[in-house]
Length: 207
Ligand code: ADP
Ligand code: MG
Image 1 (spheres, rainbow, N blue to C red):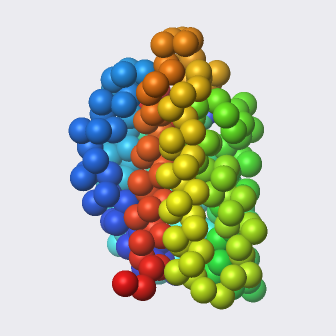
Image 2: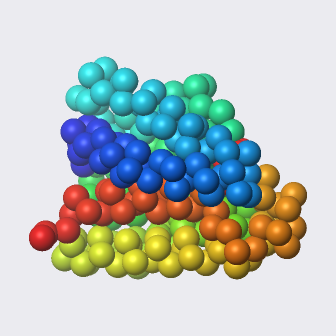
């Protein structure tokens, strides 16, 4: 893994998020306060500004700096939580491991840090309903040689995660104030996380 791969992924994430801007905005208007898309786009812009400064650095340092930038510039719960994910990931980088092994270890750590920070787990109608299953899948498939197969499986699992948020109540975040009224609505953070994951995975699928 290198800086170029990381920044290419961020650019692809920005493209897919912008494409679904109105949809994500609407989801947070329905069960939150409507600022989720703004927070995500702000974060992406802020970290893309660091490309020149960081592209040649090692992945652990890049993830740490990206996390710190998001922590200090992006509002909302999602700002602090995505920052925590990236900083958590930076702690487990190991240059001795192959990309997939490394990535699974890093992502697992990032998601665990996010769970602790937000005191949340699977089934609470948040982005963790996408990130936890993706992390488990990545762990299970870390030795798989066919990367495109892993990418396809992860895209599938992430989409299932988004759907799983629809018919449950929220027990964390703003949507929890709505009680039963949150049912029938997809969680905005789950959808934006899934799109980001899809953008990254698409880079590994041979068409
Ligand atoms: P805010 O809720 O502060 O307005 P955003 O709108 O940017 O922040 O982000 C909302 C998203 O944050 C939700 O859709 C949900 O996925 C996620 N979220 C909220 N609280 C938590 C938590 N404790 N753990 C994980 N994700 C959370
Ligand atoms: Mg919001």
